Every structure is written in structure tokens, then in C-alpha cells.
Amino acid sequence: MKHELTMNEIAKFQKEYEQKPQNRVAELAVVNNGVAKASLDSEKVRKLNRTFSIEIPTDNVTDQKQSGRCWLFAALNTLRHGFAKKYNAKNFTFSQNYLFFWDRIERANIFFDNILNTADRTLSDRTVHTYMQGPDTDGDQWAMAVSLIRKYGLVPTYAQDESFTANNTAFFNRILNNKLREDGLVLRKLAQAGKNDEIEAKRQEFLSEVYRMAVIAFGQPVQKFDLEFKDDEGKYHFDGDLTPLDFFHDYFTDDLDDYIVLFNAPDHEFDKLYALPFEDNVEGGSPVHFLNTKIENLKEAAIKQLEAGETFGFGCDVGKDSDRQKGILAHNLYQTDTIFNIETKLSKKERLETGASGSTHAMTMVGVDVVNGKPRQWKIENSWGSKVGEKGYFVMDDNWFDEYLFKVVVKKQYVPEKLVKIWEGKATPVEAWDSMA
Image (cartoon, rainbow, N blue to C red):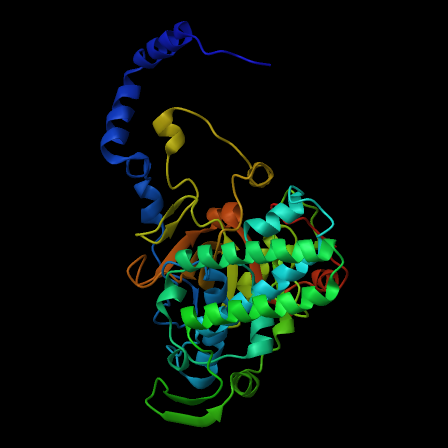
């Protein structure tokens, strides 16, 4: 059904606009200040007072700068808070650059696997197109960090500090992804021609080139280091000649298998385990799994973990109803419907179904304010540096949690047994373009 817009219709729209004086008031406010500033609800900001009944003692925040490594920062922040609690060292941090280096190598390798496994399909096939669209990106999931840590260990920040490229990934990503697309086309042609011996030789050649690029961009990955730090009471600690895996195995008692990723996607069946194989980054590593369940289960586990003095990572749609500079996440923070005299009512399910929302950013939860048994607001440690929010910390109202928070990474002991059994069962895979991705 087609409709051609006519000049008569436009004249009618203009007349209807001019009949309501409040439209002119809104026009002046938005033209001179922008939609965000004109529609910001200061009452929402006032109600978030940054006082929390349950709060983990933390200090300096980290900064991912111009990169999409939030998932890695959130995972390492969770581990560093555990380290801080055990060794009384709040500001001890781990090298994101070290694990990010290995992530690029591993993702290149798994990209080649995916391309070879789909070599019998056309380039226009939706799965192949999705692989080619983002061969080696910054993002993604808790399980990906687990795979890297288990294989390569951890190092302190000082042992392999941030590189310029780790903090500013866009230009390097463009170069690397174009190379991988070209490599992928070569491997596809070899697979289609049945030249299996040549495939492995070419894969080795391509991976060696990716390794060279990663070393030039991020620096040679450290193999051994001396662990040296002063705790919060000034006590000196030293442990020499450690490998990254030595450090992880000797200083961390948490089993990374103890964690469950609870997801809230109302457009999918609840109390069901899903797999996202497209987002796996290490062959033989931990698969990306989400246990989809109602939002109340996420909140219950989250509060129990914070009550136990343990932080956790979570994923959300950070760009919705948020003020980056103030560090505010509040549902209906911007009264845009009032400004434009419209009514928008998309549910969380409908936003997922239409692509209007999804998990775009990972952060670390470090506190909650529980009043009369119900959470009122949540304290967040972000990875955008100390110049935003309150020294890098954000506050989220509980309604925002309902609408825009999608996943929490919590320990099994804080999750109902029924859900633990589902987590330990068989997962249903979803496509790369699924709303959970």
C-alpha cells in the first residue's frame, strides 16, 4: 500500500501545529537547548541521592577510553574487587591490554573456523554475511573473558600497561577486519576447491600475520613478571618470576565455573538456557550461554551477592534514559513524550523484537539501596574514567533496572536451585542476529 505525500497534507499539518501555542514553546526550548537538555526531568535526578544500604568498599575506577572493551573491564573489575578483599589492596588492577592482545589472536582463529565451516554457502547467506561484517571486534561477553583468563592467565597493569591502540581501537579494527575479510575469501576458495593441505598452510600464514599486527599494536605479551605491591595499610608484598597462569592459579580461589549469566529477554522463553556460538572467541574455551529468566530472579541474585560483599558484572542498554556526565540512569529521565506531545509505549519485549534496545555495555555493580525489603537504587562502577558521574560511579533507579538491564553474572550459590539445574543442562543455540546477541 503506497501513499504519496501531498502539499495539501503538509499545509494541514502546519495549520494543526500552529493551533497549539505550547508547540511553539517546545520548539524554542529544543531549538536553543537540544532535546536532551530541554526534556531532562530534574526530579528524577534529585531522587537519586547516592546513599546505599549495601555498598562494597571500592576506590579508583578504570577507563576503557575509546574502545569497546567494557566486557573485559567489567570482568576484571569483578576479579580485582575479590583480590582487594583478600589482599587488602583496593586499587590493584589487572592488565586489560594483555588479555585484549590474546583476544584478537583467538578471534582471528575462530573467524577462520567459522568461514571454513560455511564455505559451502554463498556470501549473501545471512550467517556468512554476519561473520564477514565483524570478523574481530572489541565487544562482548563474560564467558569470553573466562576463556582468555583460563588459557593465558592474568598480569598486573604495570606488567603490561595500556597501549595507544588498546585505548583507541577504531583505526586498528578497520585494518585488521579488512585483512581478515580478504583472508576469509582466500580460505573459502581453497575449501570450495577441496585443497585441505593448502588451507592449513594459509591459516598458519594468516595467523602469523595477525600476531605480528597485534604485537605492533599492543606490545609483546608479557611472559613473566614480579608481583610487587603495597596494600592499603602500607604493607609490602613481593612474589618474583611469576607467569600469568602462576599468578591466576596462586592468587585466585574462585572457580570461574561458579558463575551463571542470568538474562532477561521477554521476547524469549523464560527459564531456558540459550547458547550464542557466534560470540565464542576461543576454540575449546567456555561457550557463551545465557539463562533467560524473569527480572525478579536477576534482582534477587544480585542483592544476595552484594550482601555477601561481592561485586558482579552486568550488561545493559546504557544509552537509554541516561546522563553520562551526571552518571544517572533513570527510567523516563527525559520527558520527550511531553516535549513532542506524543505517546510512546514500547515494552521491553517489543523493543527487543524491533531492535530498539539490547545489551550494549557492561559495567560492575558495587552497591544497592534496599528500603522495606525492596531495591530503590543501585550503585555502579563504570569504566569511563573518573571525569564522569561521581568520580566514575553511576547511580541507577530500580525502574531502569527493569527496563534496560539485561544480564547479571552471579555465583551459583545466590541462584535458586531450579535455575542452577537449567544452567547445567543443554543449551538451545540462537542465530548471530538474535536480539540476545
